[in-house]
Length: 158
Image: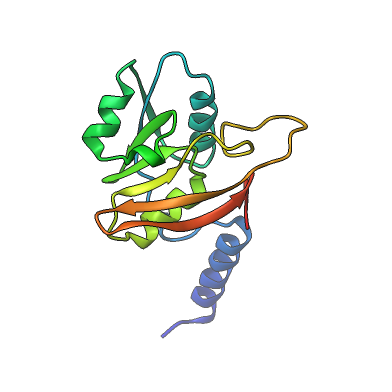
């Protein structure tokens, strides 16, 4: 049975936790993203910065043999972009927004991964000051084909 002092102590601790945003259980850390990019590509660094800002630890491998990595991982030619990443058993091709990657990791669909084909203006790492952002699809791909996973206009989900 709780006495009054114990009750007030617990109540005070609960208020402190709520006020500071600290929880009893910490969220699991995000898995490491391993990015393979060409040494001559500048926009890939912008995507890496975007992923780091979203809380992902990132390792970058720079090689002129990026196409070999895409082939090994089964990235379809029509979904190819300038860099390829691996995270938690999934392939991330191109300028996929971090929130789409987080959704993929939470939902765990039966798929090979996500891709943003090409290099749409306004996608993470492809921001151009003063330019109108493209609308683009994030494509879920795998053995059962391809389908739209999310649609964005620049950094915004539409």
